[in-house]
Image (cartoon, rainbow, N blue to C red; front, top):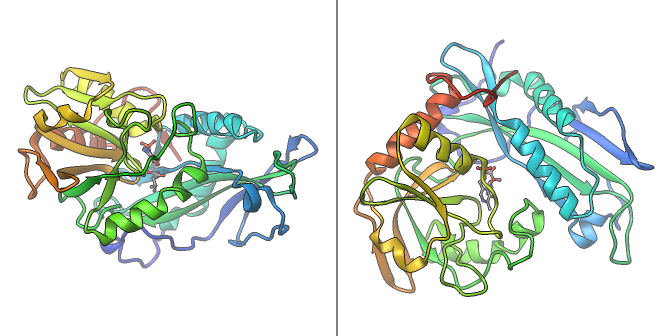
Length: 340
Ligand code: PLP
Ligand code: COI
């Protein structure tokens, strides 16, 4: 397969149109078969549920070229299952999980020329999403829906790749207790835009959100879960009902315990304990593991001993093992790698 003429190593995290995308419509209580199309545009009624009441959710996963030249993706079944949870919470019809995984494969296969080569530092980002497409004017779920998957080649989410970033404690909340923080609803991201624009204007890369009810526990950032490493090398990840259950974080917990023999704690993490951690990072499909060097709490700086120059040593081991599994250098646990 001849690859597209793209400067893979200099890609940022940005959209570029690829050849084909998957589209399936839900009407009269059933999903159609779905097709691949070259049309990257969508025409909708002005009163569509997604446009009026933000009835939409999405997923994110990646495809990789392995060291031995295969094209694979990472744990797509978990994206299918999380999208099911999102749909159920948003009164949307579930797209069958097995068909979700098949459609992901179809899209990657149809855009194989856009899957970045092994070693380029880039990957193919895959974006499944669903929205209410029929007209609603009273506040209620739409009757018709569209499920789509497109893909686009991407580089690092944060400029500078593996360089530690600086984040700040945010005065706004991401998710209410018993709200929608645990699902991947578009509305969770719409309401974070004000804060992220402000964070960037103030010179910070991301926002750290605290629990909305008490502001004493660490939740997550706008697009990634936290990992912390204690001084004695334990992986600690925040547990809360209002954060997104990151597939990367769940995978790292297995990598830490089973591959690196580390102790792992998944528990509520108080904000006032983070000054005692040795390393901090953000983890997610887009972020992979982005090291955090510094957290600014209203002018008070928490600087991790790993510093601002490079990833801390334990974070690096986690990063190398996870990406090694994703790119076929290290044997994966059963079912993690799906060949296209
Ligand atoms: N948290 C939020 C709010 C996200 O948007 C994402 C991205 O998907 C994550 C965490 C990381 O999740 P995952 O590792 O499944 O990509
Ligand atoms: C992902 O990591 O897939 C996400 O959806 C995060 C988003 C902020 C790009």
